[in-house]
Length: 113
Length: 117
Image (cartoon, rainbow over all chains, first blue to last red; front, side, top):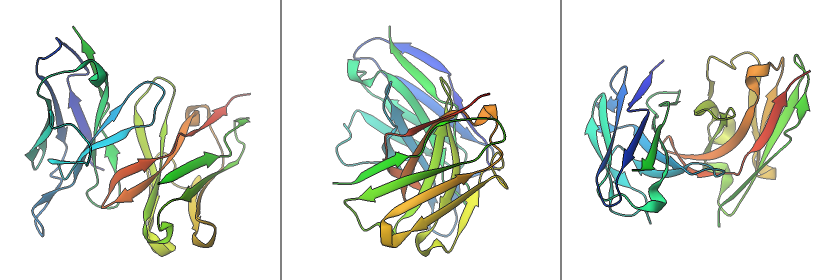
């Protein structure tokens, strides 16, 4: 099974500053047939279910602020929050959907410094 | 609007069984792949199982394979998770979610399963 490893486990960023979360998969989640990366990013706030932010590694969902962006390919991916806002305090998860199983990373907690 | 409502969570003894339900509305349920995902208290997300449209395909995480069974009833716009031989480590909030090309785009609020003697 594909293992997803996020780094760091937590980070504290000042308001308005950039937050960067990394996600590494144990094998490529890029499909050669369509050149798509089968990876999503989720945001979970306390007491709420997760919310899908980004699919295909870099496609933002409708309504997601453009300060959230995803990049990467193959086995290495990044979620960037370009200018951290107070409402972005949450745990962020990457998730692969390559093949018949799906796996989440362990999560990265983002706080305000 | 899309709504997913999980039910069936309860306190159950180790070795016991439980059936969770996920009632869907606001979208064409029968064409969607669906998944169950859980979150132990204070822990991360763990995908458990998915079922395709028309119940053609399904798969499970190794942690629940052979103990849990996913099913759906398109006439009732519902999905189920039958859980057997429950263990303390199965204690979690269980979410159902729609799958859109493998990404989970809509989630329910979850139902709590507690396995304890």
